[in-house]
Length: 326
Ligand code: UT7
Image (cartoon, rainbow, N blue to C red; front, side, top):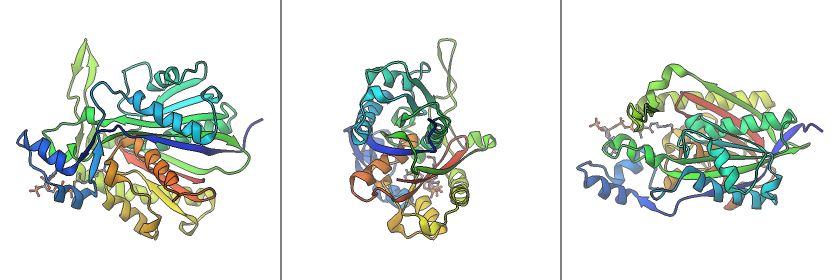
């Protein structure tokens, strides 16, 4: 039987234990002659700390405990999953996908498993794809994960980017349901802006060719993000026949508190309705939305029946939104 809706049955997340405060970063960068400060990072971004995975810890290693926590919260066993979608830009390998590696680590086999690459919009893209597959009857119990080890891409001689990002993973179990559920989503991309946020290196001829470190024109990304986050929000509200007044929580990509507060203000939402974990996690790219979601659920902020707006924005340039009743 084909379900009318998909709904989130459980959430989970995982942060690697090594936490670096802004003072820790400042001291680390000073050893390279790179100057930054807690005051600058807090004032411009709202970030106070981030977590970095130890050497050898891969994207799938962070995804596994997040997935297991989501399964436990949903009351599901791993062998009940019939679809795995992992959003990441920092996969374990060029191929196979991190979703296949995660499937093996979960001790299951046979179900479809693939990665989605939409950088910081990745989780919103992955959730939309899983929702569409559930509503098409191709899956009934999907594991949707955002997991990143962005620390591996950082240029620690570039203070304009290296203080911003962190590692982590978040996951949801998305199940077929006759009750809402995901209400509407919208995904967008504009490849003309590839250069504003990219890691241009690739593997070729047995070595990395091109620069394998992250590059960002922060101000260009900032301007693009502010505009598209408002338009994507309005688009999903209109599709679902709802208004801003129906929103209980905004769970945006966690890159910069100024962008997040700006989006809330444009939607006339009180800052109390903003889920903000950027201070403690930094920007974890595709992991940021499910990490923030799980933290807010476990903190008792987000409750069953609440209406949530999830939003992603980032490299590509990509952006999107998902409106759902939790
Ligand atoms: O995940 C995808 C989405 N990504 C985003 O949404 C990121 C969007 N962009 C941003 O969040 C902000 O543009 C940044 C946080 C990246 C930068 O903030 P800003 O207010 O746009 O700063 P800026 O680039 O205009 O730099 C201001 C000053 C510069 O110095 P001068 O030229 O004015 O002397 C920078 O060199 O701040 C300097 N600066 C720093 N100073 C201390 C840049 N990075 C640092 C640093 N520590 N880490």
